Image 1: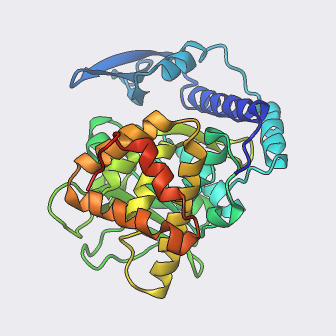
Image 2: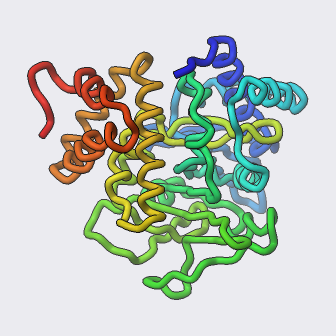
Length: 355
């Protein structure tokens, strides 16, 4: 695996910082101030604008963190550096780091401008994977980063707790990019939609974790004004999302799963695909992404992988079964006979295995 030079990683980190700082400045460019609220023992930031018709308007900013405090501190002095951000994107693309296709780039830009990611929606799937090279410091195979859809996910609890929402429904945001976007009818929830399609194959799917009994009925996410399909295991993936940037235009600030969570989640999901030709293709792609990303993370984030492997195994026998089955197939499907043993030696306690 080819590592990315440290100066290039620094450029990517700088673009992430600048893109999110600019987004904060754009969304909160009116008179007002940042305030905090306490919820369940944790602090959250809001922006309180000036009085309007006798009422104050508070807009959700995000959970308290050192990174967000730094962005807030620099909010008033930040300048629009579009040209510099474009130069960073161009420089990163020249190193071989890939960005999204044009349609996906335009959609991500529209979603970011509408405040979807401020509501802590998370880009999941291959579009998120495209941003990981810069985050983990390794070049990832272009064949693993090809996609014709965009997946968004959000916890329902977060969607309700932010006490805020985007100005227009998600479908209308998508239609600003392409008026031909249409909702896909849902079999189990007539009149409600979590899938949106344009043309013959491109889709935007909205997802949310399902931690209760299996249920195909759609779940409403009020903050992003869309319904969502509930999926098992998704809570593991999108917990404690991280900031990243898509290499499109001046760099689009987005939220993605932590790369180590993405890798282990894909390991399990590769065993969940149905036994169809399409699903087998997707299952192998899931496995390739998982192994490639774990290989990239093993030298730099071994303790994070070890902690998350323990968390995954503590979730229950079904979780352990799926992950261990996937590990057992890496050699047969990808021709990597050493991977499973090397991974287990790193993440499992000495003299003990998760079975």
